[in-house]
Length: 224
Image (tube, rainbow, N blue to C red):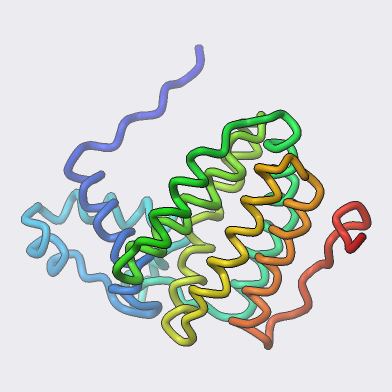
């Protein structure tokens, strides 16, 4: 028989979502200690759901558990950025290409872009941008590919939060998002994939110029 995943208790889920939101919007910064007793007091729960939430976050790569330092928000450096964005460059443009070729609806991406443009603070804009990217790759027709990209999504958002805190580049990226969506809505699968590849690669190179060179677009996705 196929085992059914055990659902996360509601209190643990609440704490998990709250801590993740704080990390991905920069309220909790890389290297910051996450003390169970303090978090339990803040959220009005016992230490058990906090401990379980932190274990889950460690599994997704957002926090690090150390015997000596306790639990801390994961540090972001050039190597981490290169690893995470390397995976995105390999998978995300291909997923978008497939979504466009199969005529999938991109209404969710358009809505996310609208929310990002109307955002009044960095946290709201960051969350909308994450939803924009997910709405591009999720309808690719391959659920496993979507799940693989979901697995690196939070780590990519952590890299972005650190980069934006140091050097905001919202306007440039918003323009690139609009061009990616325009090409996708026009049915230009290859052009949208190239634009997405360039968007992802240029962001990490600007944010972490000391990172090792990321792979270029494939011949199919390269310049015309």
